[in-house]
Length: 260
Image 1 (cartoon, rainbow, N blue to C red):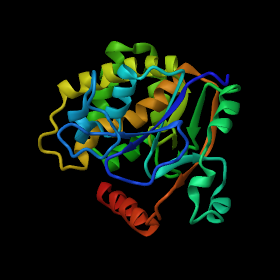
Image 2 (image 1 turned 90 degrees about the vertical axis):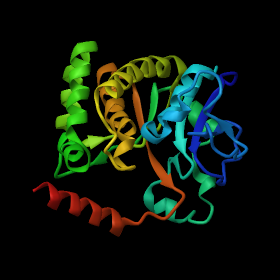
Image 3 (image 1 turned 45 degrees about the vertical axis):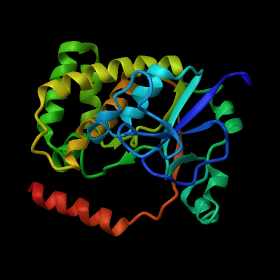
Image 4 (image 1 turned 120 degrees about the vertical axis):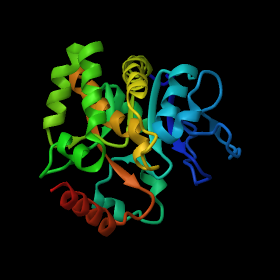
């Protein structure tokens, strides 16, 4: 196992403190046409870097799928990483959070037993995954996604419906898995998203809603996981920046009121 190559992409769009561990690869997503930050860009080789405003960190996933030769691949974000520490334990490391992100030894131990490492699920409690999307985004895009799955991958339709009527979701598109499983996932995901891109008109969306393919992909990742039944291990996510919970709660309540 020690000779296996593991790379965890750190998706970023700005200069930020990065882990010292060589396993972590800072990746400038949406690099095409932007200032060089000194990180690997997602605009080399076969790439979709220019789609970043609509595809978010998926431009980094596409780049890794097409250009990176490794045994295991993962994704985190410049301010979000996997950790084995719970929320209370994380507070003890408030000023030295990089000390408790997953290191290579920890990941090697986990991938000996599991197929995929994931963030713990978000529980929406009073909403389903479907109704949450309806309240926060344009539900017609998710409806069209379902149609595409029915046409291209009908075997996934039951898993899609199962995820959508549930109340829990793995978010952030974060994971660690075998590259061969990742390649299979990307082949499935991008066929759906590129077809969706051809079918929907986002020209009148604001900048937030134009990130539609990133939003849809978070749901589709859960569908793919549900269907393929990989051995999963869930860990906590540590946020390097302070979360404005008041703003998040007010935004959630505002969406609920507007949906009535």
